[in-house]
Length: 207
Length: 207
DNA sequence: CTCTGTGAACATCTTCACAGCT
DNA sequence: AGCTGTGAAGATGTTCACAGAG
Image (cartoon, rainbow over all chains, first blue to last red; front, side, top):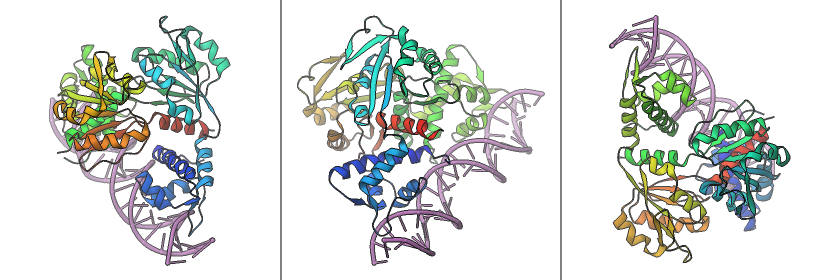
């Protein structure tokens, strides 16, 4: 498969949200123009995005809402359930462990870890925080598709090394630090302070 | 000023982190090549990024660490303090209100709001959660540069309308929904489930 | 006549490569 | 000689515009 731009994947994911909304309203078909309006883009962009994966529409009519939703879920790999482990059960980790948006998308948090004895054994909405020392062994059994990193920045790289060594191939990092991973492991980072800085720039530069 | 790509701003922000690290270690100068290695990019990219704003280096020598750090802070608008208000004091809002990374970057959370009586009056690390009904009036006095939205998706748009009407020009949205704002208002969205979906795609497509 | 699918044109971002200062 | 600054080339992403299916 040809390489697909992240911007395209991001838009597909948004289209899917709208499609699911329309699906619930009972809509049968939708045009690229409608999808574009909902998603804040152009109809040509919508069609181009979809064209990378095949042609799912009917000329003169548009796209079947349920069929397109199913197809996008398939493309994104959302037909399966994803097992997710969270490392770091501070405020950010705890918020992530209980985040509704994950479960709605079939990302199931199966375990959470922390190094702080005061946190170990506490429950996050049914998920009992485990001792980080058992992480390596547990990962074999839990076999998560994705691990979320929510530890302090200086602790992140060692955790990532352990997680990668355990064979996990997807990491979503919330610690504000750059991470090195072996080939074949995918890391994405969400840096909340960095987002604020980009916003600060936009507000400062706009004159 | 010419328009600067978001990718450039994002990298500048990362360079700044490294520069501050180097500054603490007492480094006096740094080359584009060093910065590139730290930031996972190329030296040409670093020089190009900086060149949009002027020429701060010395040929044959590199960049002065403190001078470049100061200049980037200035470019990004980080020399001032930013007053930040958070709307929504659920788990995500609470985590944001107490996030260390914000204060370190001089983003000061000055108030938090919620609609739930059970949350109003509780304290988040010194910030007392206020009644959302007083938001509009309070915004006049607080005059924040940025508002963070951490309410449920269906509540987000009405809050954004109120916030924009109060004259706030920067919004960072954590609710998984598209937002409409008047001209002159900048919104950025951090959608945690969407980040997981992009990761799921990367793991699914990589074969 | 409507709306998709897609090459071609265009715009934007990144990398190259080297002139020129120190 | 070392390293910056920057036009030019190259790669990538977006928009246009229209042929063609329904």
